[in-house]
Each structure stands twice: as structure tokens, then as C-alpha cells.
Length: 426
Ligand SMILES: *Cc1c(COP(=O)(O)O)cnc(C)c1O
Image (cartoon, rainbow, N blue to C red; front, side):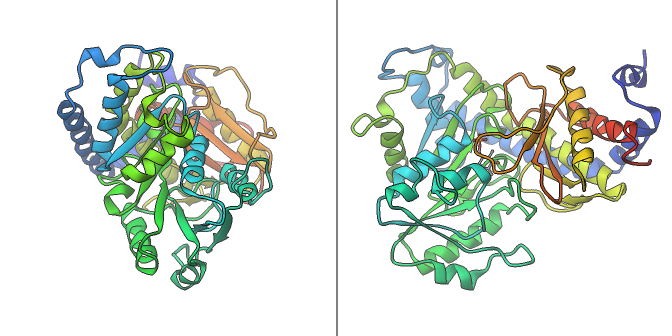
């Protein structure tokens, strides 16, 4: 059976398939550049694992307190080496990205301190963590004040506003690399480096933290290579390589990471406790695969931008733009088109392909959110997934795909469902 016959069985029409082939043919050079970044990052991870002398004995499960867990400690050394930081906290006890960020913030901010976001409003779930939207146990409740400097109209940093917002009380600056559910550009590591240098020139002892979600391994350097004191992310995004079933990481200075460990477990215990419960093989192997998995997701994002721009939809980032994360936003203009798009992503999944995504009021989010994911790890967004809050400009945020080939099929199916519903003409 030829390839298209299989695709036809999966519901793809000849027209959509042909359009996909045309787009793919034009992306060869771009994909070569992505493969070169993946090769560099693969070497970086491999070198760290060899240097830390990882052996099969480090995959053993521990239970109870988890004292002297050599496998856990070496994994944290591998992360620290790859991110070029003094220390790392990589744990299944960190339940998600929001939790990792919460630990990093609440460990390093005390009552009376000020937190500053120099890049506009942070990611939806962080708004309750900070207390921008009132919430029990928010930082605001504990007496941590929040300031914000918005980006300029063109998406660049507003250095004058940032200088004004930094006060003697500013303790920590949070910089979100990826756009999240906003339609602003994501920042390259070099841009983040400039911003950190500026903030430290105004207040040398300020802690700079980067929300690195979706950014890991997209470039050959990470925010910790350009001055970040902490980089934070989720293991069910890029660095888990699709294999980690839970977890988060915080890499940074020894002083910052120590405090995070005391916050995560307990003062006095810190990094010494936390049984690995047998999860280490997935963490190690996932991290080993993460550079190539991220590369596949990146190819999918670029393919989606080229396809949908050709059909007249606004894409953020635009098809030709330099990338700093794996997220592709496509502004679809209406709820109906968002639903059709997500149905296509769902229909292409290896798991739950028969389910139909519907908008729902998800905890932590202000508007109803639609999510499409047929993932091996529930909610994993390094796997092929699409989601977005139902609000203008009705942008769907597409990301992931454990392989480029699967990402491609998913995007073609999203277009197919839009075409089937008569919402787009080809
Ligand atoms: C996903 C994400 C988070 C939160 O991660 P969860 O694992 O969903 O809690 C925070 N910031 C950004 C930019 C993200 O993309």
C-alpha cells in the first residue's frame, strides 16, 4: 500500500495532502538548520551523561525518604551540566511547570519584597500564583508585591519603564521566554541576555529567573548561559522528551536552588529527601531524546506556519521568523474554526483519536479553554497538542509532536477538518 492510501484511510484528502507536500518541499534548508541544532544539543546531553558516569545502577528505584539517592543526584548533576549552572532540582515531586515556577518564586521572595515582570502579563496560571488574580496562598497574600512593565507596541522591551519599575525592594525579576497564551513574540536567548544585563546594570543583586517552558533545546544556548540565576520548566514539555510522565526542573545558582529545595520539601531537609519511585529511567532517557524530539516539534511548528500563512491566516511567529520555542499560534478568527482545528489534531492522535474536544472551564484559566491531545502522558504538550482560550483573536496554540512525521499529519488533519466543515476553501 502506498503512503497516501494509508493517509486516505486516516481521513486525509488528496488536496490537503498535495498542499502539504508542496510546503514540505520548500522547507529542506530550514530543516537542516534545525537538525544541526539538535546534533549540537544531543552532543551536549551525551557529554554530560558520560561525564557524570551514568551507569545502569543509577536507574534503581528508591522509596521512603530517598536519602542517598545516587541516581537522583546524578540526574540533577546532568541537568546542571547541560544548563551550565551550579545546581539543579529535578523531581517527580514537582507536579508541573506552574508548580516549579511557584517553588522558585516563593522560595526566593520574602514578605516586603517586590517581584517584577518586565515582559508584560505572565502566563495565565502564574497570575493566581502571584496574586494578580486574587487566590488563596498567592504571593500577594504573603506580602510580596508585584510590578509589571509592559512590552512596547512592537513587542520589544520598554527599558525606560523597566528602569522605573525596579525599586530598592525589587528582589526577583521573572522573564517568560515563550509567549504562552499571548500574541507577542517569544524571546530569543540573546534577547533575554540583553534584558538580564540591563536589569543587573540597574540593580546588580537582583535575581533573574526565566520561565523556560517550551524553550529548552530550541537553540544551542539556554537562558542560564546569558546570566539567568534560575531557569525553570516542565518535564512534560521539551526536556522530558515525551517519556517523563510528570515532573519539573529548576536549574540555577547554588543559593537559589538550595532555597527551592527547602521550599519544595522542608527547611533543613532540602535536596536530601525525595524518593524517585522508579521514575529515573524515563527522566534520563527522556532527557537524552529531548534534543531530537524538540527538533521534530519545531519542524511541525514551522510547517504549520507556512501552511496556514499560505491560506491567509495570521501566524505568530510568522513562517520565516527566528524561533525560540516550539509554540505556533494561528489566529483562526472564530470559535468554530478553533474547534474544527482541534478536532483535526485529536483525530490524528495515537491515543483517544475517537474523542471530540470541547471548550471547558479549566482551573487556573480565566476563559474557557479548548484542548486537543491524544497523548501517552496525559496533558503532555511535547506530544502533538493544540489548545487556546476561547477569546479574540481566537488563536489556537499548536505544539509538540514526538516525531516530525506525526506533527505533519496532525497539522494536515487540522486543515482537513476545517475544509470538511466548509470553514476554509482550498
Ligand atoms: C506551560 C507553561 C507554564 C505552566 O506549565 P504547566 O506545566 O502547564 O503548569 C508556565 N509558563 C509557560 C510559558 C508555559 O508555557
